[in-house]
Length: 288
Ligand SMILES: [Zn+2]
Image (cartoon, rainbow, N blue to C red):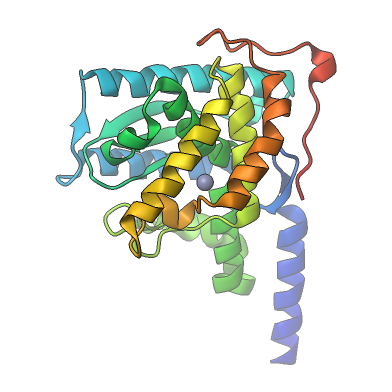
C-alpha cells in the first residue's frame, strides 16, 4: 500500500511537471494533462451535438444572429492578431464558430477551439455590439487562457491519481461530450463548471484587451457588468446562470475599472480593424 502510494505521488509529480503550461495573455501557470488537439476535437464534437440537439434552437438570419457572427469574427481576428504578435498563434488551431441560440437562460460560453454560443436571454443585458463584445471577449479569453483545460486537468488529477497519465486517451467520445455538457451548463445548468475568482479576473482583463483591439470601447464592459448586477438584484435569490459563475459585484467592477487604462492602449475606435499599439506597448500581463 505504501509502495503504491509512493508510485502515485511520483506519477502525480511527473504529470504536474510534464503538464505545466503558461497562459498566453496573462502569463499564469496551470496544469494541462490533455493536448490541445484532443481537447479541441472533443469540444468540436460536443458543440456539434449541442447544435443538433432537439432542444437547441439555433437562430439564423435575424439582426441579432448577424450581430453575434459579426462581433465574434471581429473579436476572433483581434485575438489571433494578438497571439501572432506574441508568437504563440501556432499553439491555437482554432476553428471559430459563433451561434445565437434561443433560450431564456442568461448565458454565453466559448468551448476550447473557439466554439461559441450566445443565448438570446443575455441580449437584453448586452444591448449594443460593444456589450456583446464584452461577453464574447470575456468567454473567448477563458478559452485562450485554457481555464476549462486546467479545470478538466485538475479533475483528472484528483479522480484518477496514478492512472491519469493515460486517462485522456482512454476516455470515450461520449464521456468527453458529457464533460463539456457539464462544464458549459448544457442540458442541466446545475453543476456547471465554475471558474475561480482569479480565472474570472484574468478573463475580464484579457477580454478587455481583445475587445479594444477589435475596435470596441472597453468602457462598455463597465456598463454591461453594472447591468448584470442590476439583473441579479431583480432576480433576488435565483440569479441567472451566467451570474452564478460570473458574480457581478462592486469588487469585480472596481477591478475592471483598474484594467481600463491598459486596454485603452489597444483601442483605436475602428470596429473590425483589430488594430494594436506599437510593439513597445506590447507586454505580458502577469496576474497571479
Ligand atoms: Zn467568466
